[in-house]
Image 1 (cartoon, rainbow, N blue to C red):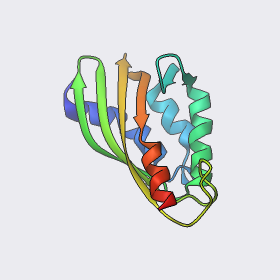
Image 2 (cartoon, one colour):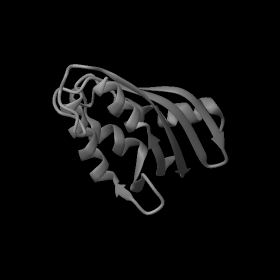
Image 3 (cartoon, rainbow, N blue to C red):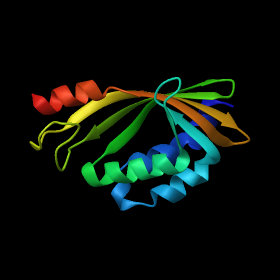
Length: 137
């Protein structure tokens, strides 16, 4: 798979993360991720596709202007590595930080595994500590 094909494959996943309250997150994620898809935040901490869809929809309510921009895409065999930036302004208290109207911008890294043209697994890291520092500043 080349980089352009990989970018086109993962684009709907990131589209679901952009202003999620304004779109059909379920359809976007189900269109690109297999029913068995798992999202890993650690070696053993994971959630399934439906749990992830619910989480994204919750983020859409809390972060109405959430934007998730793909910055770079790399391909290694059946893996698509995405470096992206997430930005948003919480509409209320966020991860224990009182609402103050401030914005954040953080780097994120995702390693997607692809099988039969669908995403089957994602390992990800988001710099939420940096987001909290920005919101507290």
